[in-house]
Image 1: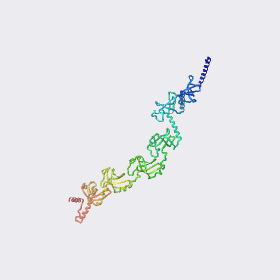
Image 2: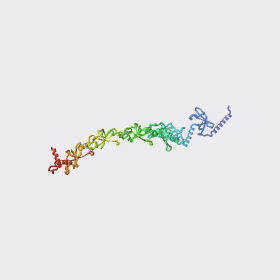
Image 3: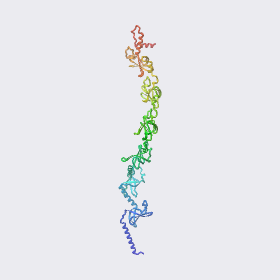
Image 4: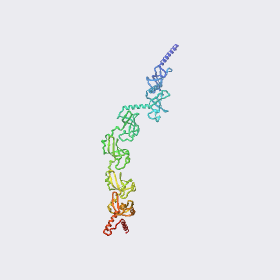
Length: 569
């Protein structure tokens, strides 16, 4: 049984231990961050020695990974006196305190911090920085591109730059993921420009297309694959060579650190076909090609990938009048063509389509000799004549003066219209000028030649008055040829002309006169009554020259009377 002395001694020992324990805690304060050494671990708690002859216990759930005995962990002193003499510590508070210090340091040094898009709030996102610390990232700073659907960002873990720091619970630090992405991209770009050279092969992903090529993502920054660098041949659609999202290997053909421009190429993996062109092609070679482009001035034809030439519109046909190449070609058509010339320095080839075939104008004179008779449809009527198609691409021209030997047409439309089929005669062929002259009147004998043969100058001819004018009388003779008796040739040689003489002639009257001139080329017939009277007078004079009445004279009036008398008979 313990004596009173023993009890007093025990109490004294307890007081001494308590006093010693309290003295050991004089060096720490509540809220202090200290190192703790794990001394025991069970299913519920982790026991840590904070070095002050006291152990604290921490629930296992405060650790993301359960520590092992002997491991050092950071804890915060929550209550150094605790309950029952046991110090109370917290791993969670220590983590929060450490994170706050890390955020402050990152803000001062502009270093990135990790966070997760947790939820969408007004104007942006709430970012979980862990340990109950939150940040705010505005929509405009969430990405390099415009945020179209904010919900798709929830759950994404990435790094952020702190724009404004708030370590309290009420105000959230303002974060920028965009600043971090821009910095990361610029770092990769700087590394790219410092390590690569023209001719290197680089890897990228097809990002987007434009009318002039495709943009290739090289790691957050773009290079351009121009349409002209996709193939040595003709490229119409960039999507025919690369697909969006496709991983591609490309050659670096140009890099400019100052302008940050990067040019890439697919075609430079192979040699330029122009370098060996003259070893494979020659002037006058006939080659097969594919139509790649049609323009107002001609058609572009690809002979092989990278080798393209132009057939000018004037080189498409010997005979057809082509207004636009689309009349005979479509893109993708195969075409046989002849190489007319080439310029390797400027990578140009002049091609000819018509030269593959014989020029029909070279033998046109043999096929359509002068005097040859043909029939063809009228394809065009003009004021001066009509074009008549002889065969495909070959037209002849019928001039209005070649319709009739004797009649003069006022307009061609009174003779023919488009679609009429006419028989004509080839009158002239000009292969060099690609002209053929035609005639209708030449189908019949020239009445002027007949007239001159049958009624040479000085012959007497019968006709009919067709018109009386101030300057004379028009007379129609054989072959519907019209001649003129000038007013001074309407009277006898011994008579004086007066306008009254014209009253002796009326349209439709028969008349006899002497041919004084027949001009076939100008188609003019000159007639004379004066010459007829003179000739008659000579005949009468020779008849009565030996009579006694030598004073009798024979006048134009007498001639008319005699004609009347003969007519009555």
